[in-house]
Amino acid sequence: MLQEALEEDAANMKALERQAADLKEAIDRLHEEERTTRNQIEQNKAGQRLKQLEEELKEQQARKKEAEANLALFTEWCTTLHLEDKTASDEESYRRIQKETAKAALRLDRENRLNEEDDFDAKNQHRKAHEEKDQLERELNILLHSKSNIPAHLVNVRRNCAMRSGLRHPTCLLRANWYR
Image (cartoon, rainbow, N blue to C red; front, side, top):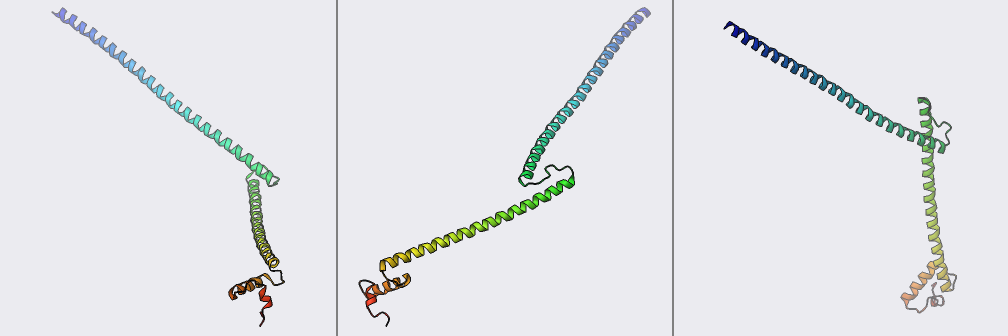
């Protein structure tokens, strides 16, 4: 009986040792999974950071292209405005170029305004001259039709008076005692 109890205890010990070994293997396997998961998380963070850095690089490249385009436009304006400095090497020269550009812009605005005023005056003079020409043509036509030296507005007055008085033709007024 003692022998059976010892055998039974030995069997239980072996079962417990197997169970302990299985648990140890499970623990080792779980530790390995945890390590792998942490590694993947780390790599994922590194991957995310890498993606973030790539996006920042693209943004910086876009900004660089925009800055290069602005610089090209700036040098073109400097050439157009006949400015001697086309590149701003420091902040002071940039401000100086900026002031020169502002002065040139104000000068161009003033010249444009003066040109617009001259254009407006020229159009007004043209319109007045055209109106005066039309008036002179009308008076000339009236004088040619009336065959007298009486100014046009007086010819119209004479014609209106003739019509009211019942005379046939305005030249009859010359014969009538008009000046009485």
